[in-house]
Length: 627
Image 1 (spheres, rainbow, N blue to C red):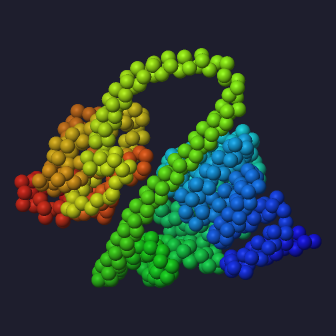
Image 2 (cartoon, helix red, strand yellow):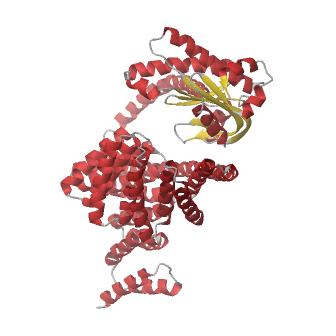
Image 3 (cartoon, one colour):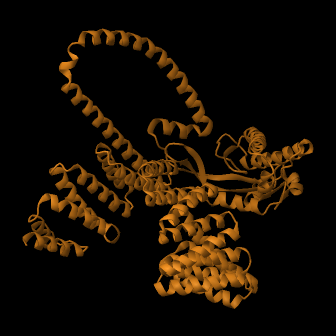
């Protein structure tokens, strides 16, 4: 009876998410009336229950469970307590502590040969790395979990991990691979008749086809998801899928159907009180009416969406509302209001960009701390292995005494050989280090490379009055579909190699290529006396090179070029595979200039034009550059 009363008190205290001193004392008193073996699983269960609603309380319960498990040397429950702590810190977005606890749980489960536990923890670790944008490590951990689940033939969890892998490929915009994982997951869920899982995966498949602009297939899977979600009465998820169907029809310019699905989605999100969904859907409806030139209806929905978005500070929705309202008033001929909303859109865009920069810097710091913690855990594993080895040696020392002299002789010979080999190895290492240093200087500025070699990190830097060049290849998707992968890579390699030589000739810097897009800057090299002139000359040389090449090449390529001058932020992105990148509205404006350029033409902004208009390239600009 005492034990039953104690358990009731524990559950009663757990209902409250705020723990006063008296409540904690009551909990401790109740726990003292049951055995340690009974306390630990109860506390771990409570920790799980509080993951979502109150992670701090979850940490409280799991910490007590961990202390009791360590005191009683109960390894399995100790691993479980670390697992619960990892989950609580995950929901608090404290990924460093979450990873630390998951790794400790993983270490114990490996010792206990708990393959199912290893798989569960590996999946959770994959989720953390996915949140941090470290997709390589996310995939590594998901694949490890998948391997264990396949060995144990746990089909339900196999389907979950396959879905997670699909989301990683979706984040990487590799929708073909995402579809393969989703389809495999769907096949298993259908076999298990997991209706909720089927609905979720159908939606994901529809979204992948949507991103690939294969609208018929996207609609097929979205509509199948809607049927199941209606049966399951999953209103939030149903509204999301209906909204996506509306977007498909909107992109196909079938606005009547689009509006029907948007309205259905709007009714649901209003009923469940989803303000974000309500603002987003109203924006979509307003955009559809704007496309139909039903301007009064468009204005009504867009202003309602803006009001809700401002109330919940949904910046991306606010930005979209301002954009659509600017277009609406432009159609009305009310240019003053159009300009007002365009300026508001620009202001919120700047806020979003500034937050993205800060978030990216914070994410880089978090990734650095997380990976540092990961390395510390790996050292703990090695130390554990070393300790076990030492214990084993001590246990078997008597057996080794007979062959001790022989081992000493062998060790002496090995030491001598190792000494000679080490001298050779040191020479090889020195040569390879020189090669790696040269390679690092090829991909990063000297200051950045030195910072990374000395401290392992570098600070972002603001560069003033940088001229940004952005180009992409006209009709690349169509032309590339006609070529084999080898032919396509050879073509791009030849073109971009010549582009690089031209950029280097004019003392500018190529930052990166993204598919068929080419990004370069002038002015980050302090020795370049006239970066604006040189970047324009380089752009002209690129076009002349392509014109000359097209005369003899069976494959004709054309580019559009956009150039803008302004401030940019430069810095290293990533912790392991270093990439030097540039950020800022100047990059975005250069990209927009490129979008409005013409084939084999250069579109420069007014800022850049003011720098070069009185220089020697001005007569060429009048013929070649679209302003």
